[in-house]
Length: 228
Image 1 (cartoon, helix red, strand yellow):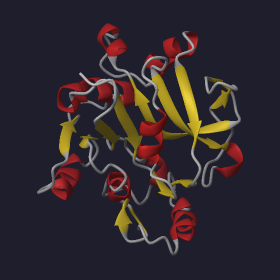
Image 2: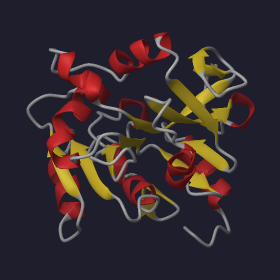
Image 3: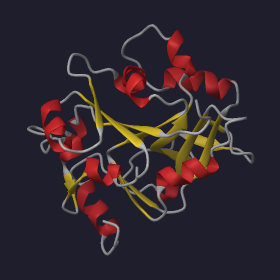
């Protein structure tokens, strides 16, 4: 199996509670920004990769939206598995180690975030590479950051950088986790301890679209972008 990722999982299973009432009758990935569903904004960054989308909340709407495309669906209708559990269930469809994962509640302007990670991935020393946003540039994000980055790019818990929601990650550690539902931190904790979890700072613009009032902010950021 290649040491470089050739597949991506897009997380689209969440309940979207922060986006209510817009998510009362549809899943958050189908909420529109600049006339296009958030899921489509994410998929536009994934050219050339096998793409898998996980589903749970209003899953049938996402299935219908993806009908006729090459995108595969990892169905979690029976149980919401969180990010780590969702990745574990999707592994047979992804058939890649490492893999890329991407949240679908953000929009981007500038460099392709997926390509940024692929360019910076160093398989001999990394178990995970996360795309980071300086807290000062984290449009739409409330609260402090998630990580700090040292001079060699290694991550530690901190507040200077926000995790953008896109990463390359090795999946070997999933086999030892017996839980069905668990967060990505179940993998990240050991990687942080082993100093094999790295970050690279995104050089473009990013907006967290987690709440209804984030939508006009995101649309202002995207205004005039020929790629939208």
